[in-house]
Image 1 (tube, rainbow, N blue to C red):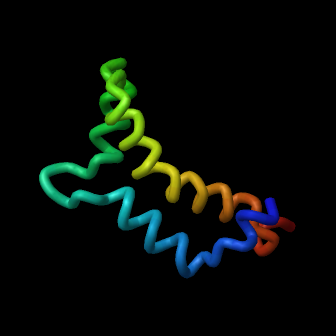
Image 2: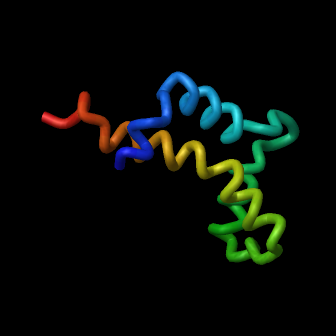
Image 3: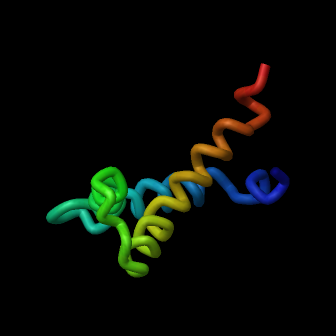
Length: 73
């Protein structure tokens, strides 16, 4: 997890929020792709790429927060 420790939270947090919500109208791509995944219609390579592009920073942020030394007792 040293790679996650090397990524500053001050960089990861705004990046994760921005990409999770972009584009802001008419609907964020991440939400759209998650709905497609749930419906079983996520099959085009561009849609799969979009899911990873918009979701990866958020997944890294969650991992970083879960594995952070501050949160462990």
